[in-house]
Length: 395
Image (tube, rainbow, N blue to C red; front, side, top):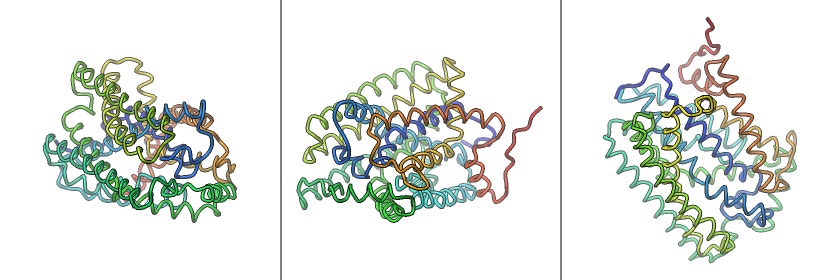
C-alpha cells in the first residue's frame, strides 16, 4: 500500500475522529474539574448519589476507554494513511518529534492528562510495523493489549498486598483533596507545580504501565486501515455483522462494571473485576462504534451530519487542545474562573454538551475558509519547516 496523496480525504475516518475527539471529553472533564484520584475512585471527591451517580454510570458504560481507544486506533490508521509503505519516514519522525514537544508543553503548562506525548513516542515505534501483514498487526496488537491487562491487574494486587485496601494509595485523602482544591482555585501559577508533578506520574503510567495497550491499539488501527475497515471499503452487511455483537457484548460488560462498582461502593478489593470487565468491554464497544459510523457513512444517511463530524475530525488536534484551554479557564483560578471542586458531575456533563455544540458549529465554519485548523496548520508548518498555505482557494 503506497502512501495516500495528501489531498485525499477519507470521510469515514474524519467523521469517526470527530466522534472520538468529542467523546473523550465526557471522561476528561472529570480530570479537569476534580482531583486526579476521583477519576478512578469517584467517591473521593464531591457527591456520588442520585443524578450524579447516574451521570457517572452513563459515562463509565458508554464513554470510558471507548473513545480514547478509537482515537488510538485512528492514530495508527493515520500512520498508514500518511506514510503507507514508503521507505522515507523523515517527515513522519519530524511530525512525531514536534507532536512530542507540543505534548510536553500541553502536559506541564496546561493539563496533566495529555495524550500527545505517548502518541508521539509510540507513533515512532508503530511506523516500523507498517510493512506487516494485517494478521500480524492484529496478533501483536492483541498480545500487547492482553499483556497490559495482566500487568495492570498484577500491579494492582501487588500494591494492595503491601498497603491494604486503603484509598490513600490513590492519593485521595481529605488533606490531599483540600490542598488540590485550594491550589487550583487560587490561580494558574499556584497549581502549576502540582500539575507538573501529576503530569510526570501520568506519563510514567501511560508509557510503562498502559503503553502496551496504546501501542497495541495503534497496531490494530493500522490493520483495520489496511483491510479497508476504517476506510469504509467493506460491505455494509459486514459492518452490521461486526458492529451489533461488538456493541452488545462490549456495552454489556461495561454496564456490569458500572453496576458492580456502584453496588460495592467502589470497594478497592473488587476494583480489578470492574476494571477488567470495562477493559475488555471498551475494546468491543469501540469496534462496534466504529463499525456503526462506517455503516452510516456508506449508507448516505444524514450526510450533512456526517460532514459536520468529519469537519470536527479534520480539526481534531485543534479541538483537543481547545478543550483543554476552555476547561482550564473554567476550573483553574486567575486568570480563569476557579470553579475547580465546585461543579458536580451533572453540571460537568452539561458543560461537555456545550463544548460539543461549539466545536460542531465552529469546525465546519472554520474549514469553509481555511485549509487546516489553527493547530493543525502550526504542526504542519513546523514539520515541513516552512509556513503552509492556510486560506482556501476560491473560484
